[in-house]
Amino acid sequence: MNDTNWFCKLDNIGVISVTGHDNRQFLQGQTTCDFNALEHNTWTRGALCNPKGRVLAVFDAIATQSGILLLLSRIILDKVLNRLKMFVLRADVVLTDASDDWEISGLCLNPPLQDSLNLPGSKSVKANHNNVLLCVHDKQEPDALYLNLTDAHNNLNPDNPLNQLDLTQHDQTVWDTRQISAGIPIITDYTYEAFTPHMLNLDLLDAISFNKGCYTGQEVIARTQYLGTLKRRMFMLSASIEIPPEPGTTIVSSSDPGNISLGQVVRSSHCPQGSILLAVLQTSAIDCQDLIIKDQPSCSLQLKHSFDPEFALS
Image (cartoon, rainbow, N blue to C red; front, side, top):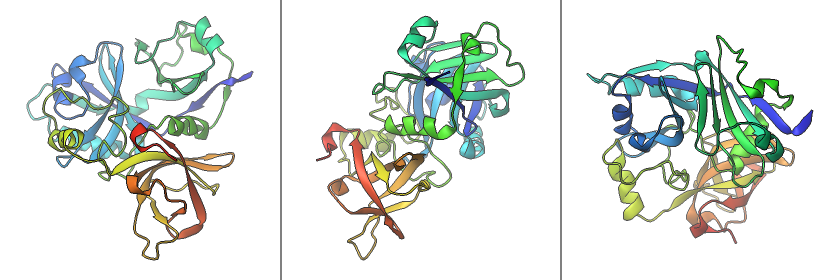
């Protein structure tokens, strides 16, 4: 087995199926991305927000022949699904929890193996009735990442070349570490309605359309884009603890006796050197040399990467 080619099961990802004649029109009015521009067998990233522009969920949306699949954190799926159902009204839209219909894996394949297989390119999807494969390539790494959805009720697909591969199996932390390095946020119960799309760098991830027209939260998001000053952004940090801090955990300065919040953890994962995490921080705090997890003074944090060139680390 070649350890540069590996897979891991992603049981934390849930799936919402959106079908019906009005599915695109419905999602167009509820989310930040442009579903009218989403072509068949392509995918896009987007967010669902409340009227105040606070993010309820970050998702990957896949356009298939039978409808649209939204991939999002499974822990908030019921909450998101119930909220979306409130706005269906008379539209021809059917929203269902399809999580149990799919087995989802993350794949990492090196360039030689990519070249030997007929795999989809960036933003493309290869799909049939019982398998969906999409490339979520991290441009910073030569090895490409893929999400593979297999029909949980009929996972024997002789046409899927991935079934013939001898891949190393890892646990989910390896996938999470790569996603964190690429700056991909997730929303959980602890961060539901905590951030705006700009705080999560969704504008940098092409997850916001600024010319699609009205949608829930659009006024606040547009004002931030064109008139506002960005006071919070998401950064990658390392932590000197092996147990990763939970999403929503507060970040402070050890020299501040008042423990005033400078940011919050978005997602985290264990890595060989301790932990790696994404956190929304005040941009004024990026030169702070004594960031710690609140109530854990021994957990020092080090800023590793800024995804926004405007706030480059010194």
